[in-house]
Image (cartoon, rainbow, N blue to C red; front, side, top):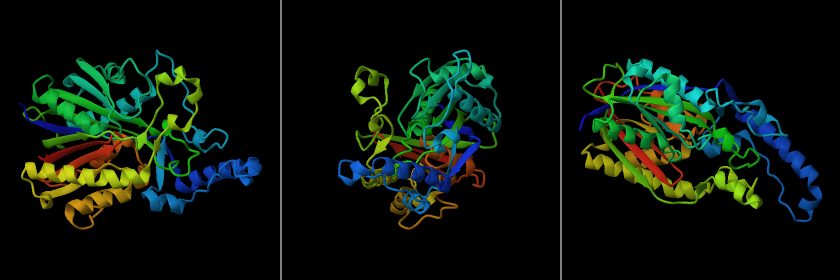
Length: 374
């Protein structure tokens, strides 16, 4: 088996950002209108009033202050509250492909590679815009990569599961190098009329170039020391949107066709699972937790990350050095979150430094990648 390194990362950030204050103003304007229009039914107890939101509530609940979005006007329009993203013809590159290419070009540049050096493309994300052809094959064509491509979805853990797939392909000799990309338009499946979740997600795309260690020439190399994956079925994070929805018209437009979760249950159940998985992985690799310089954790919720790091370290982490946070600026970008943190907070580490890239989410699914900077 060949040793495998991450040799380059890339990030595409959409041009629009929505602050908590802007999002709250839109939500509250809708809620007040809804309550006024349904005052009689609410008064009679036939309907629940829409609660108001606040920036203070959002930041306390999640640590999020703003989020980047593919489209801003449609989300803030209280008559719409859905991003406005026009369909493209089949002859145009799709929006997920376009995002992937932009992130991939940066990753290739950091890796010192071109499309000719890549043998495979993996698009790993929560939110694929179509069933087929695979977006990965489209990205492959847009970049001029010869080889293979496929899509995969393990919700918020898709990137770490994608890294594991790339390690297998490269380690076994099937490919010299793999491009793994995570285009996420999470705002497309958000219910912006749900007070408890309207603030959670943002949009972004990350890319990772992985290759054989003996062939890499990048100045940004991280050896993959070990990987660990875990899934356990749970309904506590779910999205029932799919092609079978049209087969039962009674469900069309129902809230469960968008993102729904039991947030408190997720917090209680997932955090201990993540901490235990990482702890067991480090023990098997004979790496003391105090030797880990940095945890690039899934950027879903600040309180979750703090709890996981606290369970591992036995103390609060240093959020600047040990467990960097990007969700305050990006919000939850699903599979892209931990890779955004890795991309933005890696260059200051010294050679030999160890780190953990970990993502977790619906499934439940958890992926943990231990890396060493070369």
